[in-house]
Amino acid sequence: MINKDEADRRPRGRPRAFDREKALAAAGETFWKLGYEGASLVDLTEAMAITPQSLYAAFKSKADLFRESLGWYLGEVGSAARAALDEPDVVEAFRQFYAASVRQFCSEDQPRGCMLSAALVNCGSEHRGIAKEVAGYRAASIALFQARLERALAAHQLKDGTDCAALARYLGAIVQGLSIQANDGARAGELDAVAALAVTTIASARR
Image 1 (cartoon, rainbow, N blue to C red):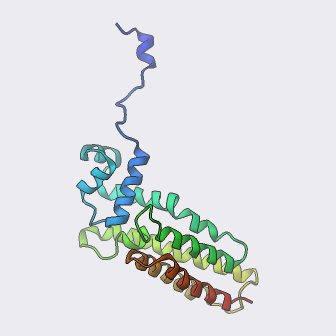
Image 2 (image 1 turned 90 degrees about the vertical axis):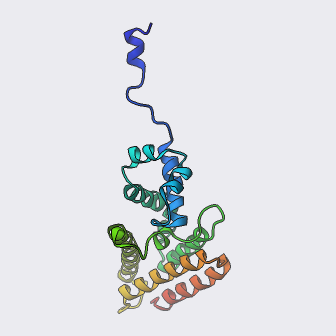
Image 3 (image 1 turned 45 degrees about the vertical axis):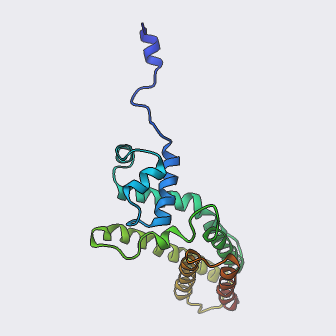
């Protein structure tokens, strides 16, 4: 017989049958590899090693799982590249940013390319809301670039009159292009050469 003290020491509620963070990472890699529409419920549950019922109980819906997967990607995968932008010198900051991005895009230990570039671009009308959210993340990256360039301009690292908005959009287009080419099988050295040209563009605007 179990006495009251023993019962009180038992954990309350139904024990979780899986590691949520590990399952989220597996879902993130599945979306990254297959895209939002391409990742079926079977693909996701097999990768996460859970049942559909557990998926919905833990994450509510495929869309909500995808949103959390984007957060996982930005926090766990993309953080190194973003941290490079904190370098004091703007040219060195973007040099390190592109170097980290290329290493990530071409890693043999994870899907190639960038999840934000590949996960959802063109889609059916029923997924337009998710597509808009992903586009918002890409726009935020460009805004981050622009803010970094504007700080450099204010610090007199860039020439007066430098069009930070246009330069940021150009740098964002380069990142997205690197991601797509990595996904198509381009080698890291080939992408490094492209990134070097982008950094040269920034250097040409140096004061």
